[in-house]
Image (cartoon, rainbow over all chains, first blue to last red; front, side, top):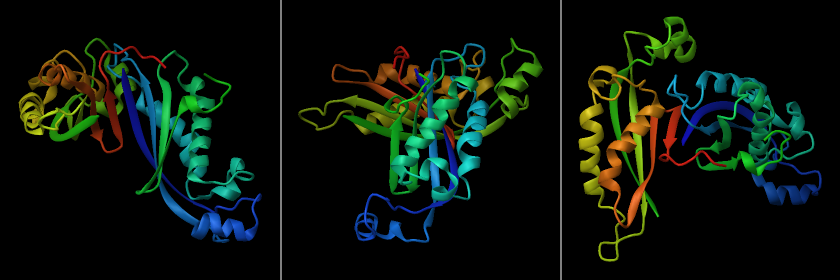
Length: 148
Length: 141
């Protein structure tokens, strides 16, 4: 089987602050990431799909179709944004990169069947680097979805 | 345990299927279908899995793997026009998927032994697009 991975980038700001914790606890848990004005990262996102080869094209996925999906559902809505204020999912959830990976994976799963209606390719997972040293990875089958 | 060695080669290719019309080739492969060809700096990561040998402490001697990669990858692929010079791409579209599978086929006999096996071949066509091939295992969950 083949796994095909495409890499994308977006820049966004966030602030890590949980409403379930006191200000002092937030400061202790999140440290500098709790700065009230927020801060930003150049996120690097890898999206992987898997499947067999299409005999005509010799490919496991149409990378242009994947690009269109990821651009529409993730890169355009997230790039140059304040994740806390501009992404609905983070109005009530702390935009840690763990939660960001879950949200990206959820969005891609939600739209996957409309773009790739056949049995293959399947979404394999996403990997997001918040900085070159902090990397978060989730498999598509780890999260709930109404699809697949 | 998995060990990985990386090699790089530069090559040109055209992605088009002669059984499809020019228009269909453009639709499927986009700019990659340009009939005059274009090139990439490919990066290949070859992973071998197994247990370290009790005497040498090695899964595979990386010197041997390097020589195998030079013979089976660098020699046929580096600074070549794949469609014209590197079979099977005279009859198979040189997508990164097919390149990964061809490299797997070339390397497997030289890697596999009683204690180890070829685990994965990763081919970067660009830093933003890469393919992992794990052999002809079924595409299960």
